Length: 434
Image (cartoon, rainbow, N blue to C red):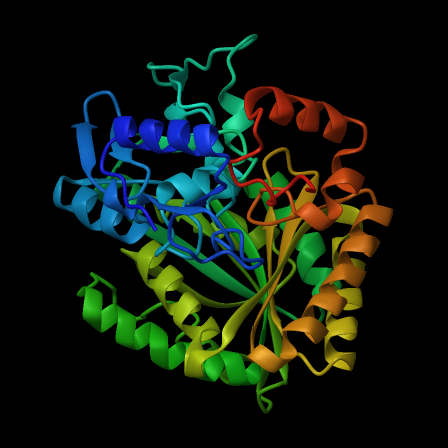
């Protein structure tokens, strides 16, 4: 393992690897599902040595940071300066370079888009050792045409090593305060359809769907409270609505807790005034309103803790389908997982453009269950592709279905890879086959 501290060191390592024919695997937080950050041979390039917040410009609304800094560390440093970010993944112990290379989504994506949409500029070391800068130095000034920026935001490190990221930044107090309402639904299809209804009628900043099991939510409630206390958050008396989900549900529905609860959280940043608009447009049963600071960081830390309890492995299955197919697909997926002995929670996000829904099936699995879980996941991916959707990993391509997902464009990407990485040294087995 090698831990570089500068872009020049990364460059020298890659040049050496080319001279000696040594494979190089890039590692950030090391939280990927399919072992992309595990080096079975050659050099493991651990980017955690490049972990500094480099520059902060609140007047122009951007920051620059090393790619090896984690989201949770970046959050902590920015908060002290009255700033925050948008578009980070739920797993906040991942690094920003790793997240950018997969262009994932968060529950703010309906308003802010993907992680890549938050990036202004990248510093990248190419497989041959050349150092380039791509993107725009100005807020909102994306360069089009010959700019290679998109090559590095969904390819999971196969075209270059991201060493520095220039990211949009937002005032902490103004943008991090969220005013949210929760709605309950008797079935998944109704909830998923309501995503489009709420978006069309009230245009919220935050809009996402969830279907949680009873066992998950009971434990999740405990962990949310623990993480809230650790962080010293400025919560109102109503902690996150998931904490009080079951109490509110029983009071509203006047019946025992069901095995699965379907809900939508929707709201605005910085204002309570529009919440009534969402309530009137939703077809669900409103059960709670709350205003909260630091929801982002607490939710991310609590969710990852849930998925790794007792030394278990997170089971992650992410995809995108057209909104008309989303409800049926979720039920199909839950049925497949249940038949195999799993009962995942499900999250859904109405993606920018409001035509498709990003769906994630998440559960915690034992080492002995990995193969069984992966078989079910492959069945879901086949179904997604048949529906005209996309299977992905936080936005990035998956090697086993990349060719089917991209179609003929896959071969152009493969040609570019061979041209840029002539000796096939960099993350050689992540997307493209040996």
